[in-house]
Amino acid sequence: MQSAAFPFPFRSGSPSPASARSRRLLLAAAALLPLLAASACGYGSRAEADESTTLPAGSGPALSTDEVSIGYFANITHATAVVGLAEGGVIHQELGGTAATTQIFNAGPSAIEALNSGDVDLTFIGPNPTLNGWAQSGGENLRIVAGAASGGASLVVNPDTVSGLDDLAGRTLASPQLGNTQDVALLNHLRESGFHVDPVDGSGDVTVLRVPNAEIPAAFSNGDIDGAWVPEPTASLLVERGATTLLDEGELWEDGRFVVTHLIASQSFLAEHPDVVEAVVRGVVRTGAWITEHPEQAKSTFNAQIAALPGGSELPPEVLDPAFDHVEFLHDPLAGTLLASAEHATAVGLLEDVDLTGIYDLSVLNAVLREENLPEISDDAGLGVE
Image 1 (spheres, rainbow, N blue to C red):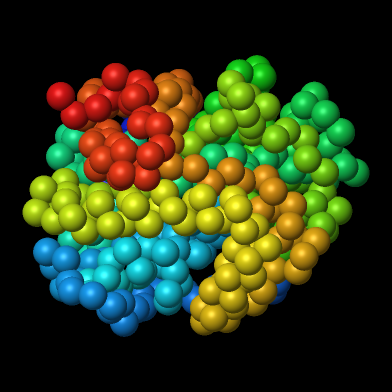
Image 2: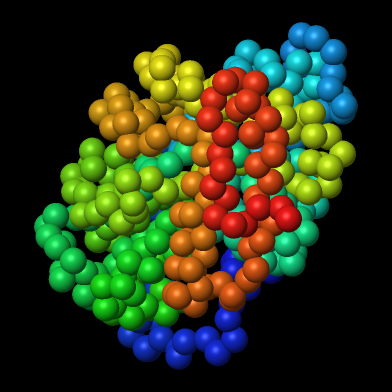
């Protein structure tokens, strides 16, 4: 297993070492992180470790297993999971007498490690950790079984130091984690804009620091970063603190849609318990529709779930409302955008060329859609199970 500190199977022939000045800056910034963590006043859980909760089984008989473990992140791009897996939520109801243990992760690599070890059976996750997990296992550990969310990521900056793309030279930007979905998007956009950045240590024409989402608001308020490429609600929280949106990532994608969260299942669990996977997928389809039709109730449920986490706190309306408006909840996995994300990760030097054939198995999703009298998803970008 690749170390979580370097979550991608890097290409051979790494970029040249960073300059001494850049290394000193990066080391100094890294030394600030414990202070930033102590002073952060962002959102959600302050728990150091990933959180696990077992929901009581719902009504009805158990499915083919008495228990299923499902992972997700405590942010708005994972609201399908946060809302659907609340006690009495739609996913919880669909599981009937099968109890659900939920695991809340702080980062994609830890979710992939948990899936590989059997600690979780399914997890909501972003595209780039999924690509990495697929590459590390040679395509034998996971399948993408449904979409969950599109959009909800932006490059937000301090308007006092950055007013346009040309102002980024010499500035410091943050992303949530080395090799995560927003990190790859940031590195690729900088590359396409003519900036050179070492993909591993983040030094170069623009300095890229990897800072956990919950610590980014404090880093911004303290002036340690000039901006960040982040998901919701961090982007809206930074705007509420005075940042401006330099780029909505949706502007870079056709129709403004791109996968930010999808649902993956371990291949062994999918083979052994397809009925459980089907129940979760049905819950995803119905929860996404419910959130779209009942946004105010969804926001209230989301806030209550986040506040219930250790150290959790509710998001104020001036952050919650724009953040929710920035995310589209949908079951289409937007396979073409995953393929593009893989090309971006390869282009910036964080992913080796990898055969993605078989990463999708949309058979369960399409069976659910037929039952719901909804259009089936025919586009898997040629990456479906053969």
